[in-house]
Amino acid sequence: MSATLDADFLNVADPSFSIRSQAVRDARERNWYARTPYGLAILRYNEVNALIKDPHLRQGSYAWPAHNDVNNGAFKTWWDNILLNKEGADHMRLRKLIMAAFTPKLLKNLTPRFDALANELLDGYINEGRCEFMGDFSEPYATRVICMLLGTRAEDWRMIADWATQMGMALGVNYKRDQKIVDAATTAMFDYSREIIRERRTNPGEDFLTQLVQASDNDGALSDSELLDIIVLAIFGGIDTTRNQLGLAIQTFIDHPDQWELLAKTPDLSAQAVEEVMRVRPTVTWVTREAVEDFEFQGLPIKAGTTVHLFSESAGSDPRVVENPGFDIAARRPLHFGFGMGAHHCLGHAVARSDMAVVLRVWPARVTNLRNDGDAVWLPDSGNTGPLSLPIKFDRRAGVA
Image (tube, rainbow, N blue to C red; front, side, top):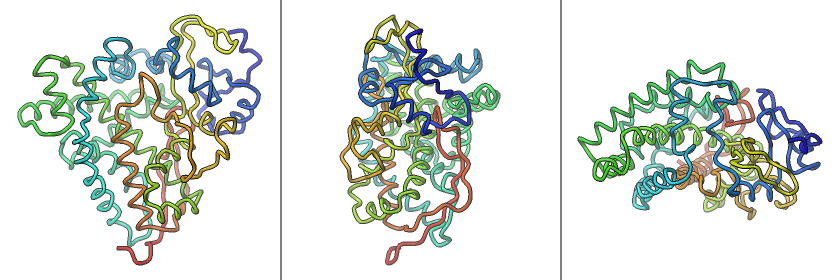
């Protein structure tokens, strides 16, 4: 790694570090990569786009516990075995089974329910003109969407959301400090998942969970442990990222009120607005890869075992590729990296895109003059980020129920 010594050093392990800081911008101007405590950071769009699909690199998130000096525990055991961190034939087999369960009919049937849920939650405080967005809307919305997807009891959402929040602490830079909380939540999530799998075997439905249970029971395509790992991943991943991304979206629109009004006037832009928010304020601030062998990229020798963090926000705002990279929901942009890309592209992206687009259609239609109502509390702005609390004020849009 001696060839990297002249590159900037970005201390992304420091909880006070911001992935959107001037230090990252300056490093991007000087070079396409930087050094970090974990390995390399890739900062520019073209290089991220190439390396995220490069066969010399594997999914690297499996090493996150070790990076944080965590070598045991319920979360690490699960993390070692999930689809996200598998490669080769096992990875492809599991992806095909999960993709088959995400049927077009499933998404078509769910979308009107997403719409009704978003309106129901907003009804609860629209007259007050204020809410704590994360606790009052984003968390119950994201969690109840997962309940719909799995066909589980809607009233379970509170405890599921709490477990997902606590498990999510593992993906931040304070994982070691929070390990006991993380592992207790992981154990509880597994116990709950075993219960709902038993229920679905007795009472099958037309949901995502039933599809996977039948794949396991009918031809043994999934082992019991694989089925359990997938269900926990579906619950945790679907809640944690969507909840955080919606909070980041609302803060972004608070900072750009003209874009909120444009969205209200042009609701067909809601799907594009999701993409634009994920370009400028992704909850997944980097995509992790690891070199499986020694190789050279653009003159830089990269040794086997090197962790490579692909900075999604830095790439998405790279002025070399993105003309006028400020927030603009009407602009045509290159693909962002918020859902990953290549062999590990997020399998739940269609559901996430759909449920977030519903929110960005419902809220602007009914609410105007979004603003902060006191200080928000934020996760560190590296790793997986987002607001822990986001108190906001708003006005009911004139002439709208």
